[in-house]
Length: 284
Image 1 (cartoon, one colour):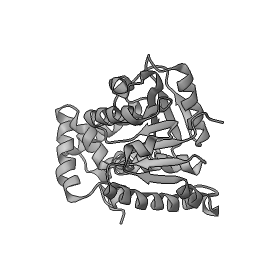
Image 2 (image 1 turned 30 degrees about the vertical axis):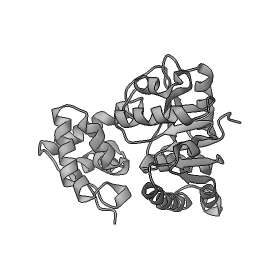
Image 3 (image 1 turned 135 degrees about the vertical axis):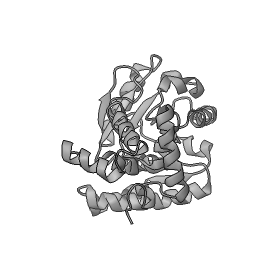
Image 4 (image 1 turned 45 degrees about the vertical axis):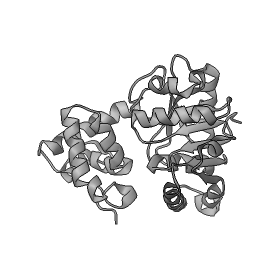
């Protein structure tokens, strides 16, 4: 039995909602927090869609288990209320350093002293955020892959200040939610998964920006050549083009050119990926 029972997830976007639902599906009470009532209403619809997906793709979920998970999720736009009973807070707010730092500064002021904090950041080192948490010994990274019900790995990465006991508690928590814990021995930007994935996505973006090939051609080539189920632009759509934009905008000139293309041709048109029914591909 994990020592981390009551869980709060900060952020109900594509991955935050998946983390919350997967955690609730495996029996944990979950509070899902977001910044305002509009975000909370969007989260309700997202959780309902996840329940429907689980019923189709997860064995046994259609026998009432997915619906039970919904009953374990409470939504809140009040941060102090959301974390008042939390053993573990998993942060999944936008991938922008200042937003995360501001979130942790506010969180540190209202969370119980015992609460463990974990960032789901895919690109930022936990040591970059640790000072803002007010509890660096009880803080680490817990990174999930998209489609958590199928791509069920949870990468766990501490800092030099993370308590070994806390680290082990988070490993056990991940296991308790049906995930395969990936224990990372020291800090590495991109962890294991994104250290492999990001170069692929970056290369795909370069091919598009340079006019070498369109997304469908790039994806077809990757799928045929490697046997992978998805090509890089399909992966972008699953991850969400807002995240693709935020990460690329912090890169070099070529990455920034890709971010500009994504913003102008997709984000500004409301095409955010699978979540909105259209991105590089249409899912309507």
